[in-house]
Image (cartoon, rainbow, N blue to C red; front, side, top):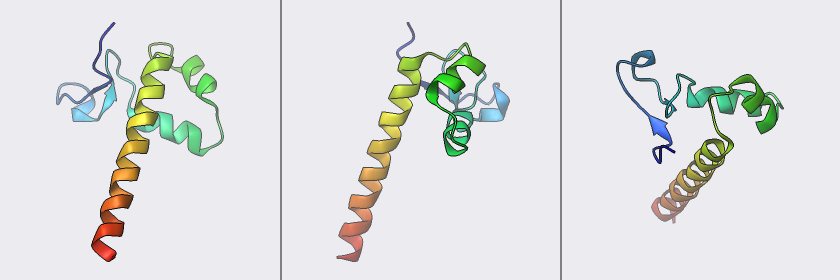
Length: 77
């Protein structure tokens, strides 16, 4: 199993961040979730993506948002 979750390579979709080992853009996951689709819907439509990859991307996104919020709060306090 590839431990790398996100791949950014200029040779794959012009450097668009994709799930490692696939050509599926990370943005597709957020597009699905934004329109009310479930993670299972996404995984069914993009069989090359593993559930653990999706979970890890969501965890990473949560940490980024928390860190950005903390930074913004520190800068505006």
